[in-house]
Image 1 (spheres, rainbow, N blue to C red):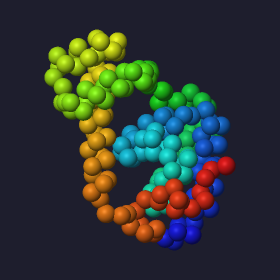
Image 2 (spheres, one colour; image 1 turned 90 degrees about the horizontal axis):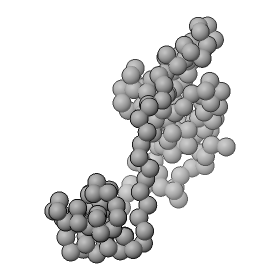
Image 3 (cartoon, rainbow, N blue to C red; image 1 turned 180 degrees about the vertical axis):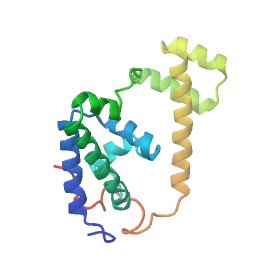
Image 4 (tube, one colour; image 1 turned 180 degrees about the horizontal axis):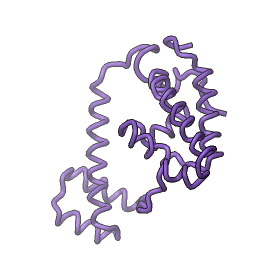
Amino acid sequence: MVDGIDLEEVKEFARAFKMRRLSLGLTQTQVGQALSVSMGPAYSQSAICRFEKLDITPKSAQKIKPILEKWMREAEERYRHKLGAQNLVDFCGTEPSKKRKRRTSFTPQALEALNAHFERNTHPSGQEITQLAGRLGYEREVVRIWFCNKRQALKNTVRLMAKPAPPAPGGGYLTVAQKPPMKAV
């Protein structure tokens, strides 16, 4: 029990939810899309994934659990009493057809060149980015995004170093060391 929340109950429901979702042939994306339509964008594929992995605060788990219970009852009802799987696809939606570009892996040599350039200039011009991309053999957009991500990482590091210590357990997010044994089996 943490803050009046039965962690074992949440853990058991997360396991059961995942099993029921898979047995209905639904993806986390489909569940997230359906919930986003009816409940708003707070219930995305990422939220479903974090809940199923129990990588979530107890308060957030307590908030999403009744929503997932209600949604799963409706999904199972449609599956049993209507047109089976096709009706469920109509209810949940299909996977988006747009495929994402594969994540770029930088060679150690490219990372060395990018980091060296970043140390000299955190905001290179468009021309510098184009030249650097050509020299390294990467798309211009990939190099541009690398600089954006590197600036954001630097900003986050500076912010974390200036921040006071986090609150004690019972409020806020749990660190790995503090996290109670809630891992799904």
